[in-house]
Amino acid sequence: MKKMGNEQNTLVLLNSYYQSFSKAEKKVADTVIGNPENAVYYSVTDLAQKANVGETSVIRFCRKLGFRGFQDFKLSLAQDLVTPSQQVYGQIDESDDIATICGKMTSHNTQILEDTRTLLSSDSLEKAAMAMVSARKLHFFGVGSSGFTASDAKYRFMRLGFHTECATDSHIIAMNCALTSPGDVVVGISSSGSTKDLVDAMRIAKKNGAFIICLTSHARSPITMYADVILLTAIRENPLQGGAFSSKIAQLHALDILTTIVAVKRKDFTFSALKTTAEAVLDKMY
Image (tube, rainbow, N blue to C red):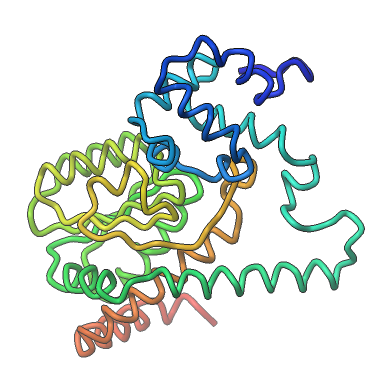
């Protein structure tokens, strides 16, 4: 949707359409109007549950307002709620000097790591690790920024001696998932948990009997419907901050914990693999 000025402020637009909404759509509107600052952080599932409606009602609500979908609506809402500098920098103020910026960012990322630690369930980590230890093949999938995390995970588990695959293109992800079978472990990485191409691919892999691990920041999001294990990271991004380094820090922290648990469970095997792979590249360095 193209914003044309103050008359196109998302909340103003929402109020102008209010009487034309269905009963379910009015519940969505009321939820957004009641707390728009939190609404920009919700997944489509979060908003549907808080409004006590189905996800399709949320999508219809967004499209009735003229948006392509829920993410388009959130992006517009986020633009209305924050200043241009906040859109890019979060809590950093334009008057902050470099030392202050360093301090704020360090504190922010340290808190994210601590919050992620509290969200990561020991039972979930154990279940994920046990599935990986006995897996025929490990698949790591992510789109956009999460695709880079998937590549990092593939590399790390390969160094530990596992047969690993990684894809970041939506078509390749879908084809890989179509070829999975029982004994495969598929790790879907999505901060929002709402990336349609990835969610659709997880459904295919689940149907084929693969074990599904979802690494996401939203416990209630579309991708989690197909998860055997959900690993949560503490990321709170609005649409204008998507792909922030803090998201990757949290994702990598969770994966670092998981790889360490797996390595401990297969100590002799992983130590041998690490030694073998290290020796393979010795002549590539001075």
